[in-house]
Length: 463
Image (cartoon, rainbow, N blue to C red; front, top):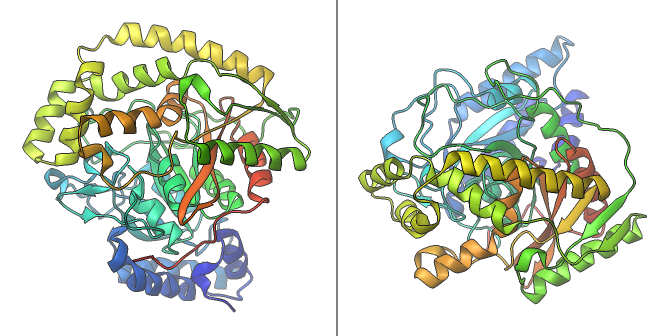
């Protein structure tokens, strides 16, 4: 058999359930791969081999007793350090939270355990999960396994780096403005930001009003196959009473026509030619798979949605966030907050929520006509690492490029990034958007695109 760590989550779970591979063997393979490549990447910043093996032993014992095990039985996965995992620090990339030890699991972590997953390690993120780059003063710098000179993405940069390099078969991430989708794009894997309310969320270790408001932030999976995203979404989205915004909506919605709107240049994004080519190629793949693809000139507003999402994200409690970042002393967090001050401060909540209702209606009407939207992830290929800290012009360039990622969460819509190829050794991909709670439509279109080819993964880190 090929190296266990190379298998998809679906393949591995099937082998474990049929007793062709033990959960212990899968865990040992995951730990060995982590030991082999993580020193080059710093993707996983906390792991305990004894704990990993103990989790696997419980799965093997349950299988030996012929007990039902979940869809991810024995599959090693990683968890981002900004959600609670019992017994581990919820650092969110902060020195100030190095001793914030969770007493119970976040609902998404609890759901993954119920599904039988083995939690392999904790993945890195930037301080307060603010940036599309991943470094901080407590855990250090995470590298992209495809090219150390480009960002691994952020804020779930450790998650993207890990799953692309074969450290775990699925990676947990969170996304408020691209934090699942951009690491998937940058690392050449796939990533799903589900609809708001699809996956329950609650961090008991954090205060009721944590630094860094989580307006529209949701957990989501990163993986090497679209099918692995599908099964991990099902596992993550089990109900939990602790989240008052959880929506018990079926994962499969009513049938819709296989119709896609393709927009190459939404709302004046002006993407580089390589990005335009990737979107056009994805459209061709969909047509070849029997989808109706209609090229459109523009979408409903992305720019205004992104501007207000930024205010909700960073404007609410701005001064407190800035004071906290100054105490922490993290250069990236300070660059982010100081760079957006003019656009988010002062903050008017009622005005923002009124416009959200209007813009969301516009998007609902658009997605009633077109079940799926195909568009760029970013206006550029993945950035040189830490570009946002170079100068003011570079900071503005980064924020403009990420317009399609920032905007979509404002309406609570699902977004799927599918990696489609490489430009040299730099990944490129596309973003799919559908109506609220219609992740199934994104995944169906994503599988049609994936069938046309994706970058090889997992890979050994390039140095």
